[in-house]
Image (cartoon, rainbow, N blue to C red; front, side):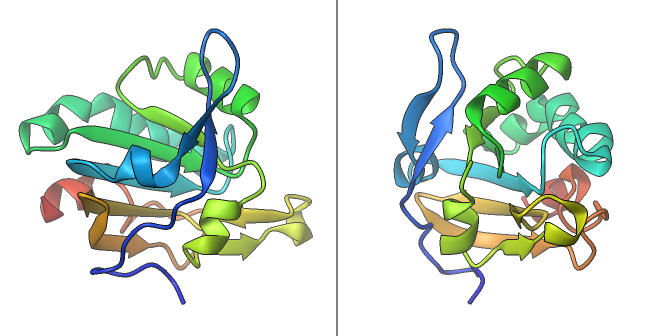
Length: 161
């Protein structure tokens, strides 16, 4: 069953890119304190993810903070090296914490995994966004179509805050 309002976020190990290489981070630690906006994407450098989804959260990070968001987190079923390169290419800086879900373990534990094998992608994350307070989901919007950025875009999140 997919993650829903009222659920506690799953606790799995993710990796964050750093200047010293990938660093392990538990999802419960990254998402468990304060108000967190989490958005998941099927893959770094893919069209909707790279052209719309990530840039929206980067450009409007200050607005999210003004509405009480402590941390904005992006997760994708890619390795930390790819997420680091994507963050650099998109000038993410410290606006968004990038968390690599290389084996799609978080996506699977959250019931938000999808089969992208017909596109040569294997198991990936569905596209979604969630508002989490102290580790508990307050709101989540999951796209029906992987290339759509309607219910999971920054505008939808801002409306929910």
